Length: 223
Length: 225
Image 1 (cartoon, rainbow over the protein chains, first blue to last red):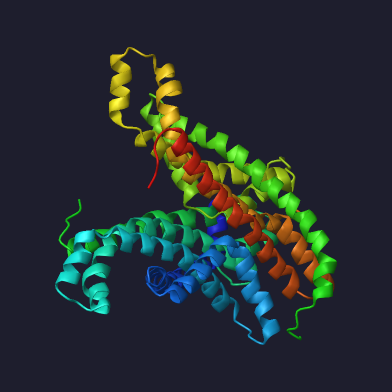
Image 2: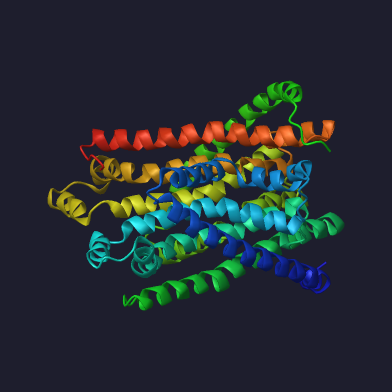
């Protein structure tokens, strides 16, 4: 069977899987971005209780493997009477896991804002909330976006894991086609190429665009 | 299903899980050793005098870096037999992990080499040192401390990615937990214990790497604030 006829026969199935992968990617990215910012802010809080909660959360989710968390959410939570759909548990597990990594990036970004900005905000007698919201946070984006972009590419790769908890994504479809046809090189090769195309030609350019946008917003032009 | 934590069941399965942990550590260790060497090869491949080779290696690295490890595992495991090359699960796992993390480590090495100031090279040129001598005595000793945090992170990273190996049947910790869970139809304790074991191993590893970094920096007279 030539590769072309393989694509004609199974291409649409793989494309359907790709749509699910992209859906997981988008939902998990939104969730992880929110969690990163919330826990990153908690991590630099002066209140030791809030800071402690954030530290425990971050250490816990960075210390255990994503796959363990994923299976835990899908197979163990029903024991506690909380049954999540496969898609939901996949998105939640990935979001929480990458949120822990992202929170550290946000913390680094907040600490990297020049001291003069903090002092300026003090001098103008801005309230702590206003200082964060109007002075510090707008300036962290050019700092955090490059490492966050790397993390988002990692997230795209991690979405392949949701196939193991029966989400019908690209990986799942590739496995399924492999089980039917035993054309392993074709189906897994195609899946690899699709992931590569998503990352190289869609995700990375989009993240670069965001970086340029963030730099322009605070008046730092980027080439 | 009752959500009660059963200690007797936990004690019953714990020896099995701990034995499997040894396999996990072994997989991570061997995979890392391969990745360290493969990373150097990838770096060398990107620094040859021939532009074409550099570009090809660069693209291969980029490709491996932006595709999921899980599918790479399936690819190596299932495609080999199609061409008459039958690899065991362990061999597949080690090759794939070595290649996948080798690309990451090559980036770490590149960053470390570029982190050595240009003036060091110029000084060596001025002192008429050979290239090999420059690398061995001047560049590598300075690049090494820069590379430690990245290399350490990927050691922990490989360790946390070993559960993926269970999908092709490598009998490591996660595989054992799934097997035990399936036997007794109780997943609460096995999976939770896997998480606990991972925490218990990866947090000390992270602390150890931070200590090593500080030690090397101090030994080189660069004290980090």
